Image (tube, rainbow, N blue to C red; front, side, top):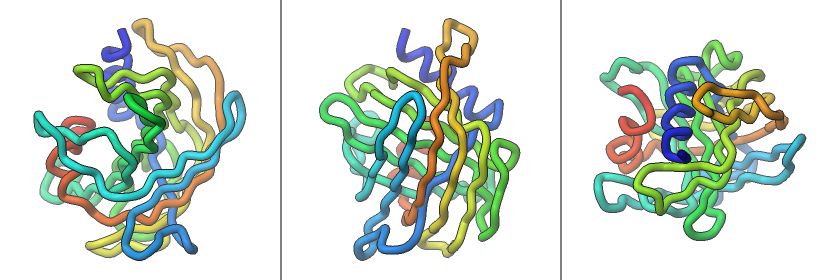
Length: 202
C-alpha cells in the first residue's frame, strides 16, 4: 500500500539518518522568494526546481503546490537544527518532494547521513488520504554545506548519492542517483505549524 510505504520512508528518514539538504546561493532566489534547485542523474535524470511559499490547506495540512521553506525546531527535542521541505509540483495530483532534516543551525559542512537526514520522493500523490509515492530515494552519502544562516533565511549547497528503496514491508535497495543542489529558503511558520510535526519528530 502506497501510504504505508511513505510512513515507513519517513520512519526510515527519522530513525536511520537519511541525507537532507538543499541549495543556496547565486541568483538562485529572485527577491525574497524561497527556492530549492536540485539536479539528479543515474537511473533517472532531471531537475527538481521548487520555489514560493506553501499555502495551508484543510485538516491542518499543506495544499499541493510548488514551494520551498526552512523549518526551525525551536524549543523541541530537535532544538538547534532546521529542516528544508520543498515540493516541485508535477501536475495534479502529483508532486516531487525533497525532505532534508536536522541540519545544524549554523554555517559549516556536515557529513551525510551522520549529521543530516534526507530523502527525495517522486510521484507523491496529494489526493490520497495520506501521502503515497511512486519512488522513494534515501540520500545516504555526501555532505551539506550551510553557507549563510540567519533567523530569517538559510542558504547552502549539498551533494550526495541517493538510493531507491522499495518497502514490502522491509526496505530493499533497487538503484541509485547522484544529486547536487542549492537552497535559499526563508523560515516559514505555515510549514512549521502544519507540516513539521506530521513529517518529523518534534
